Image 1 (tube, protein in one colour):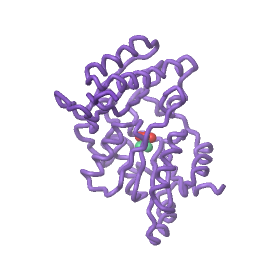
Image 2 (cartoon, helix red, strand yellow; image 1 turned 30 degrees about the vertical axis):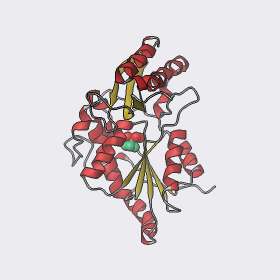
Image 3 (cartoon, helix red, strand yellow; image 1 turned 180 degrees about the vertical axis):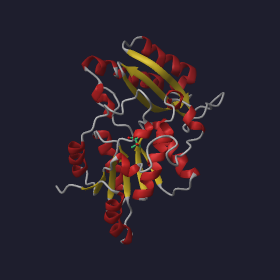
Image 4 (cartoon, helix red, strand yellow; image 1 turned 120 degrees about the vertical axis):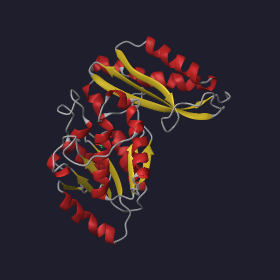
Length: 294
Ligand code: PAF
């Protein structure tokens, strides 16, 4: 198993990718903050399938500009050796693991450089409590797109708002990257895989299953409409201990408000965020509203 080439500077990355570009290969890209797990592995596989033998690049960079004050920037898990092994297993050609100064030569303050203004979707759901989060996410993704210049980039549906906003940025800023959203990978008990699951102790790990159980209860009741779907979801939450709910909402697939009377078969999205202990977890699922039961 040959491992990926590991580079830390823009110049090294450009030098490695140039021959592929000249050969006309498609480049796939999976941006990550490291602490890779099977969810990331599925993104890397998805990218590989879409580049027909071209290189897949993964970035490993804990991006300071997307962490707010009091968030977990300092304790975010950093596991580069294990990440490289997973990348080798998944046939990644290049891992780009820059230092902060390489990505932000002018500094990481909000006024230190040009940043992406994330638009109205940054004010809903996650954006209500995580001020500046999406400005940081979109800025680093735009920079990484500029450095890797991928044909296709794969993101997890687990961070659904992030996925929708990246799609919107690519469209609005004409970035010319195909953005693919890969399905969430779950533990057998339904918990969505996340690097932050590593913070949970045994009891919290058990309590955390309430998020996916809540969503599946809503999916089950969705044929009766959004009200019954939310009622079913809330009933699960009431019976779950240790879960401090931030939001539970049903939206359109692009995170807008639902139409007043969604027609039968309307595809919506249900999203949840909650704290279990001091760990903030998010999850979401598609759901079909008002479809007749089979
Ligand atoms: O989803 C993540 O891991 C991060 O938000 C991303 C897209 C790598 C940007 O730092």
